[in-house]
Image (cartoon, rainbow, N blue to C red; front, side, top):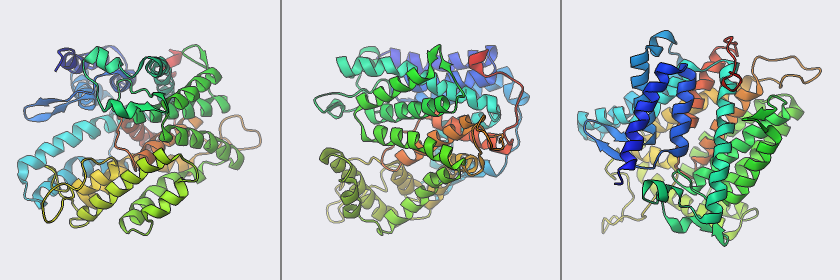
Length: 453
């Protein structure tokens, strides 16, 4: 492994510790999460007795140590509530029960507890602890806008010069190069897991920019007019050449008009409620692959349709295997991988969908825990939010468009996880923040948004 990779990952821990000792915890958390997600290498370093070091655990180790050394945890207490129960189950209960039920032992269970806690829990509870006010929602939307602006040059460079920034800086290409040549040109990957992840990120930035522009909440971000930022983000989505980016960009724009016309965001909650319905219909085979293929063929080219069909076939194979141990799953070590019953050979070489991976390894218990952890905050906000400030003839509501668009950001990630497995710490942070925002009822904290400081 090139020496710069461990330097970047370990060094980021030190940077985050320093941030917690020199900045507000909110600002330190945003920089820690956003900086790592956008620019750290896609490397994995095994550690003794601890979870492997990667982008996400580098953030979590830094936050945990930064909180300890700065005392910010004690200065920013919060009470656990029903919103925290699913994450507690995911981090501490599901790993142990799955390991014990599969005869893998206590060591495996505690190892997976640490892995889930540092991969999910630390960042989620940082969102719960340091965010929750309308001002903090604006901080998060500003961070997404700035993160989008930072990635526009990355997209433009790699579309023209080929996706090689990660290779040039960190010494290796993080995926299959063949998958990043499409429609006679390149699609960018930047410092992320895959070009699909970049497309989703730019779609989230586009949605955020459009909502804040049309709601007249933000005029400029980083001195760039918000309308111009929206156009740059939308153009980047096109250059990413990925179906998920196009779909979520269109949904992001259309949801604003639904919201504006109905003067309510309650209809948007059905995006989240669709997810458990999808689990049920796919696992029960009520909705079949030919039915899905026939519908999407009306909107997408044959190459994109074939890609989705491959994912759906993976779901079927993994789902059939997982249903043999439906409650707690098969655990790790490839135990849940579908194999030929006669030869023992693996029936497929890869799996793409996050939800089916969770269901295979952790069962219904784990699947419910992680999706409830990330979905309850956005669902609650979308079910209760009112109209944007300044709409004539409508009563104002403490819930601002920032919280609504952040709820959509998390929701789009959850929907994307039905066909892809590309988890970002940004969405985990936003999910925790939205839960606190709902609990506090949109109460102001008296601070100015970070961009205004």
